[in-house]
Image (cartoon, rainbow, N blue to C red; front, top):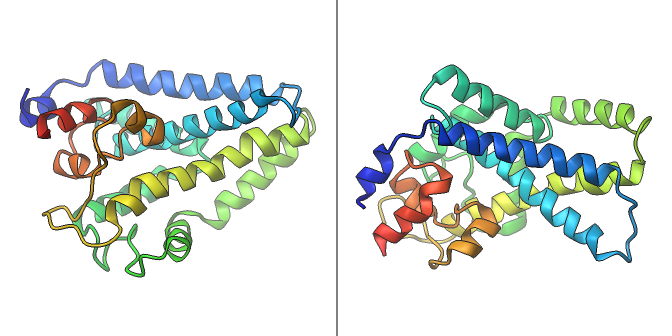
Length: 234
């Protein structure tokens, strides 16, 4: 199948179904983990952190797809999913993320790209990346929510399964979706690298966004079809 065909395939109702599944699994996992008997000797503790981190990443990817109009062809439904999934990810504000992400696509790997840092240094770049998106309002809302929730739920569980995975997910998104694809020189029109084809690892690492050249080359393809673009390019 051609990339054009992948791009123009209808997303309804699959986009909404997949977005709903990601959000539902995030809620289900969080509820179970917040009531989990946390024990650092239990391997399930670490598995729970990894699962919740991956689902947090899924929330952001869902919001990202909405920014490209890929959750639903109905604009109101599409933006509602984007707004809600961004909010669940530590009170990110969809309408703040929206213009910045499109600036990234328009000015990729230049000084006008809000996601890019010319130093190439992981820590400097990550700090710059976080400064672009984290606001004082997010921190305040997280603090208020934490202090309310700890009246009803174990404090350690809130830190380990609600707060920590959100931080780890920002690292996952940054490393696989920004740093690796845009680090160094890329001699192509999108200034983007792409990982070697391995669909299982591509999904587990960042919902196929390691196939980053493919995303920039076909921004109208939802995350759950990016593997098909990779196949078409192979």
